[in-house]
Image 1 (cartoon, rainbow, N blue to C red):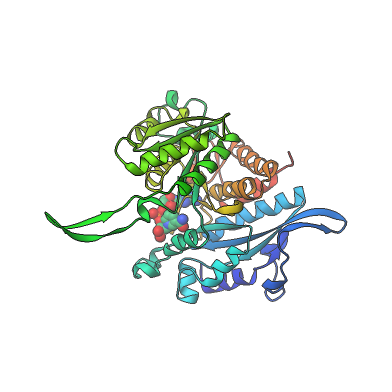
Image 2 (image 1 turned 135 degrees about the vertical axis):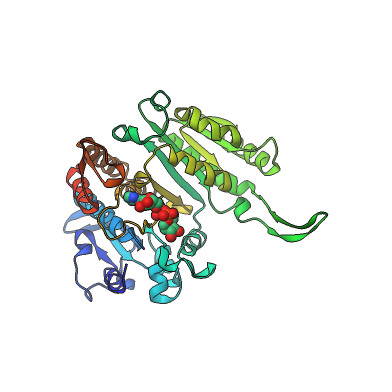
Length: 406
Ligand code: NAD
């Protein structure tokens, strides 16, 4: 993303609806005139208005986010919603313009929005900067500042893309559909740490700490999600060794009493890592701590075989969420119309489902993606013989064409 692009994005802020990517600079209302989210009457029709913060970021970020917004605009047209976008800087492009990876303005506007859509950040250009100035610092800053404590990563194998899965067909069966719910703001990544002198010289320590409140809120998210799926939660810990895991297990078991329709089982993390490969179809919703989730969600993604297809959500209180593809900024293919926008489009479906509670709209987006795949259209990363190769923009257009009301 160069400076002109950034200026253009900044100038697109606070635009509403399908024209959001076309308007010229200078004709948007100032931020304070933007109406907060609520049901409004417009032109005699009742419609819902939602405020979304959009962070295209670096590399392929702007290309894939553009496709996601096209899809969202079409959802708005079909279902009668208005989506207002505030386009914001974070990552390398923010460093170039403001000198810092996560400007205050970005955080403030995100906090006033219903949800955040993020492309990806990072790239070689900023790789040599000191740690606190790296683009990736924006990701940690957003999680912390926005109180995003639950990370949701679906690992889904699409029937059409089953060949991309590295597991044997008899293990995959018809499909795999797992939701990994990872605690995001506690545990060993945030616990006390340091260096000290020990019996064998200098030693280093990191501390895994979890409170009842932290475990309870992530467990509730997992049970609520399972309620809309196959009604099974697997909690993963290391309760045979770790005291923090024993508390984790107690609290998850307690919370499960409020969800009698959902079955709960517990697995040790080492066994879970094996089971994900041996029999992934046994899982519906997995709930686990920050570090175990970091590792297991990558393992679960890997068995789907296609990084360009996988969305994610990070949720905070009151349904607020940040939605982004799991992949990075892919500098090797940036600006070449080669990136697969489907992970971003599916992140938009998650936004519709988990923040806006628009289940039909979310299903409509997922159906449209399925139809495009069924008709044989593929971006380069998921291409196989006999299929039709398309670029980023065309893939976005095809999904928009296939969208219809359900
Ligand atoms: P990456 O995910 O960007 O790319 C890995 C490989 O997958 C590349 O070959 C890339 O071309 C391909 N790929 C990724 N997304 C694709 C898509 N949508 N369509 C087609 N192909 C796709 O990981 P990386 O190369 O390790 O990292 C590149 C940069 O992204 C680094 O600066 C890294 O720090 C950053 N990063 C950012 C995030 C984020 O913003 N959430 C996450 C991971 C990495």
